[in-house]
Length: 298
Image (cartoon, rainbow, N blue to C red; front, top):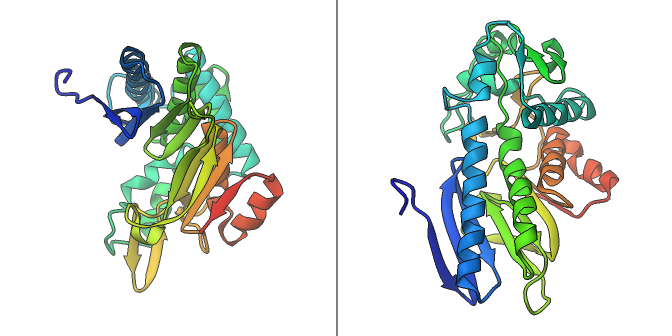
């Protein structure tokens, strides 16, 4: 126990399993090593990096770069190199998705609260907030960002995947056996198990998340990410409203899959593909086939 922060390390089924909570998600490190000291060191690296990224990019804090950008009142803000790289990536995602992946769309949370209720906002309420959404309205000249008053950015759609990839980068120099990073369902495998076998990653059934499995992914190296509405949605008059919104309309994507899982070389790439697929709506499966990646679309 470190202050109010709980970190655990225990042996389970021949693996050292480290757990902590960060970025509003359960985080887990599975380490196939007999060396407890090494496992403890790896867990410390992973926890430190996850908390560093959370502190720097959480929209719930008032002491980081996101708060500074979102409260600039129209003034230009110069960002550090790491943040500039993330904003460049977000800009690339915006362009590739035809404006459907937009880090300024977080303000829509003011009217959309995906708590499983039937509280669907009115069209007028959505339209009012939508006037403050649009990456095309932002002036971004790396590394200077200028947003109109009332606009915000939210890196929540990138944060966990970025944390996984950063953690993987930091762990690699320390390991000779397999490690599996799992930050809230965003995963990266750093090599196979000691016996050479792949990690087996279960895929949840969105109809009963955490209870049933619809399949699994075998992974020796690479990353897996899942996007879907299993936990965050509204339900009204027989219609389920998933939490991934089209920033051009302010409404959920019609005909979108319940869940999309993708496999890629990095977690950010896997996350981008799974989110893009949801944003494609009914065309999600065709989109994923065109990308020639391993996927499960439900």
